[in-house]
Image (cartoon, rainbow, N blue to C red):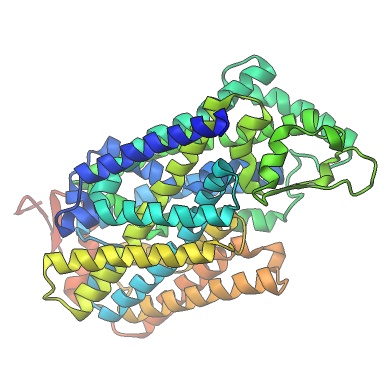
Length: 553
């Protein structure tokens, strides 16, 4: 075994031991621990956990690679995913926390007074979380596959075993505190290499300030090589696709059940708002670094790899070719590697860059540990979301309301095991790149939960019939457009499958509004509950009057 392997394996095993130790120490012993961590997480740590939950394999592994390949057009991912937190923090998170439920489907079922609405929301939660988890398991396969120099599919199944144990044991309480540790590890692992690259290329240790000069040099290189210019907008997609993707990711962020439930783990509405503010800070550290990462990596490839003799390529290329995520071919037979002859998955860029830039075995191992932290943290939250939707919203609230605490926890844990295994099987042959698969999950959330939650919180006239119609139509429109765009070549205004959420959201809003206005209004007590959500925690709305601490305001 070589030194790089031993160092990487040691760092990963040490971090795994840390996660397992935290999960065992914070083992969930009752349902409130398993679903909402006992509602006692401080805002700053909840923001850190949200950051880890959010910065999935798609962000850590795929984001910089997507920006590297797409250039300007890749910024739609960064702006969409960041902007969505503003919608969530100001329009939904505090209100949903005040309602005081365990899950998003439980909020919808009680807000609309409908078991049918609850079941539909639970099914949509499972679909979204399952789709999202495919991307995380695929990402863990990339990391483990490179570490052991085995096929990424075998690495994926190893990740399945790790995530199933890790998620089922600690529940939300264990996951919250492991996510705090995972955030610290993944952000260090992400920022250290880009600082080293900045020093190596520009002599400046602040990549956020220095990569502008590299962009200027790349503009000249692109023209000399006759390839698509990195900074020219809409070369890879239309302006409408850029806007549709950005909207899909923003609306999807505000409607993702596994993200929303993180705001249930704090004690007050104020803490929910502060959790969102802290989360934006912690997420911004990575998202502001991704464009610099992409620029430096592309610059190194253009100046140190492209133009080299095929027989004189660096040793790291052979290692990545073994994972089936990189291929080089001398298409024109001149014996020299051209940019067009270098074919690589978006998902290897961050993992390969420490080797490309020759940053040393410790940094390579650190990045591997950070990537695993990103995949594990998000996968854990997704599995809890699937588990709570099935075990709490369907099994307990619908089929067996008298189930004991022990029985409910057992069903929750086994549902995690089966969901992880099923997602892992699909991830063996993923239907797209990590960022693309994740974008589909956001599109589904845009068409289902975003209209349902916005109208459920801010429009008291929305009723169960409208909710069910809106979610079903929104889901149908999104899934239909994804399949038609990916497999049928359909592209309305050039909008691809990753921008499908804009069509689903419009359809979902219209269906909910039209059907709600065409049918009977919700009961007065439900309408009063909706109005009550708009007031601070110490205030309430009853019978058309505002109360402050049990006295009329």
